[in-house]
Image 1 (cartoon, rainbow, N blue to C red):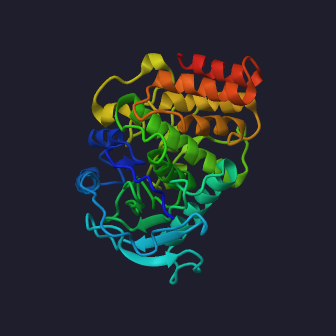
Image 2: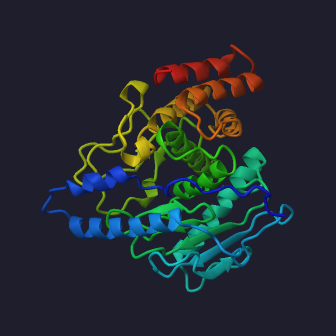
Length: 360
């Protein structure tokens, strides 16, 4: 049966594209740019506002056809075509269900949403013994072709929704496994810690989604921590984009003095923490601090990041309260590592050093 716990969606829209990118684009003065910035911003902001209204007022009716799974059924995917209808009620037209062959005529967005949601399911099942997002066999529902060239992907609280991108700065948002893993992981976060999407707890929400989306990709490609690029969203960057990705876990910037996106604002140390009110108090900005700590921890341990480091983070997610702050995160990871690996050993030392390096 489906999970008896149905969380109340009391958070803002969980999007992969941070709002500060739109602010940077509004200041773009490159008259030779390949992109009509004013038209791009007008369309993106209009659609984003409509989708935020949809998310904030989201009161689902009867279950979507095929959307209820059971713990014994295992992996269940349902992909819908929203047919570029802006804020119309999701999900759209059902075009592919579990076990069905690829869509004909071929639709890359449909097939990527199907394949990558399945890989994400497999990652959670095989690495953490978790049965889907809610832990009780929840079906993975995705809508593609949401909005008209929408430059975003988001978790509604019940399903995934993907825009096609404008084809210049961003390509279709189903193209990136770590983006799909990131957004589906917001569902896991909802059904576990349910971290409030504001200030430090919101930054932790984005942090866990970044980590778990990254680990999904590394696990699927069998890439160890030392060999991984640690770039978030590199596959959705369009041909006109100069930035190599949306974010990076490493100490450097994902982009710097970019003609469209400016300079990556994510801090990698607590002393540089953003204190303003934009971006729900910097949820996409300050997530860079714990992201970098995880990178330092995982690379210090060597091997595969989804194993020792990933397990410690997943254990921590199951312990945190919804209003958890950064210090709560530091203390909780310490407890989980000591519980599994003992106090003062190599793993514990690597964790302590990683947090110290980012200011804790």
